[in-house]
Figure 1 (cartoon, rainbow, N blue to C red):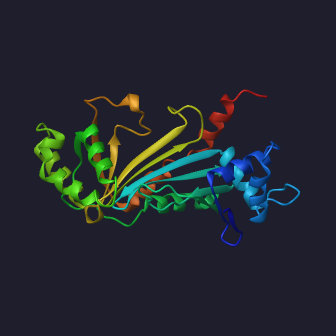
Figure 2: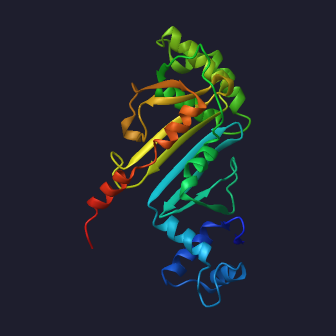
Figure 3: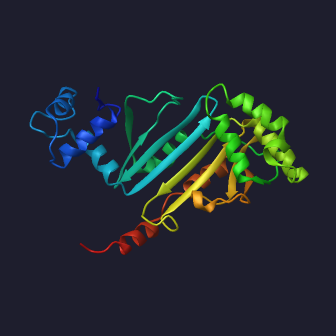
Length: 279
């Protein structure tokens, strides 16, 4: 059932309830039962007016100025959070790892635009990290490393066993052509890998100019590692069997700056508006 928390500025809605709200907002026909549930929750009045906080959510998610997807994976499984910005308002989801169980509802939380970087850092799970003195960049086949990490993140029972097998049988997973220094760094990062994050931020229709992305590994005492190549956002058609992934160690402070660098500037946003034809 839909829930409204005005004090903490959060709203819990199922996908069907959100769709009903969209229809109400657009003055489209709505089933009486669906409308009644929203009225009972205090989200829509008997006259059909949407509560102000809820209306802001519907407008922001339906017509965002900026959209962001934060995909994380760890020992408890993979999870995807969404963030939307409209004018000075930020709405985001902060779901729990669900494994195979689909959540019945989504909790949307509101914040203000100056807090967007803090929200992103929280969704990524950013912590203070230092770079170990022995850490150096390494290069591995992209398909192989993605397959290993995706297998690790399948469930709570898969993370540790997959990590152990992958580090013990590197040649089986990655082939025998990896340079010795790369092999050493790969083993170290996989041994300490605590979580992965992929952040994709979009503010226009052209992925070449209106989007930026970041892939980040948290290796705990092994520091953070950012995938420099291939650059994000990465599309399926950009990946070939020969595509290599290059990872570079970064501190927690540099990871923060990399997240900040994803945000579009005023010039980026104006460029999108200039390309939109006048009504």
